[in-house]
Length: 80
Image (cartoon, one colour):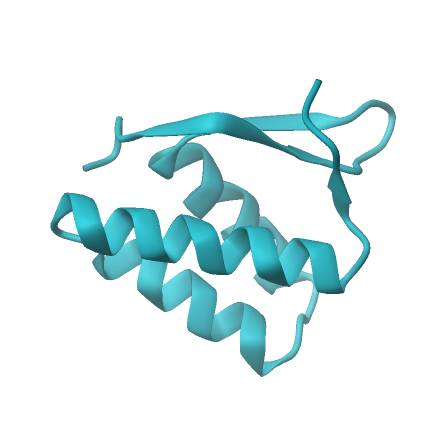
């Protein structure tokens, strides 16, 4: 499932430039990095869902949860 595509890609506010998450593995890596910075419980929940996604429907739901979390945290940029 690592190469499961995110369509459209998630564009995250990041420095020095926006970060594009195009696969489940990239999304998992981004959340893993954020967790090291000490994010609250909702981040741990999304990370767990991304890590345990074993089927297409689980991956789609986990990616949707990540989009919602990023929007709530004002970290999501609109796709072009």
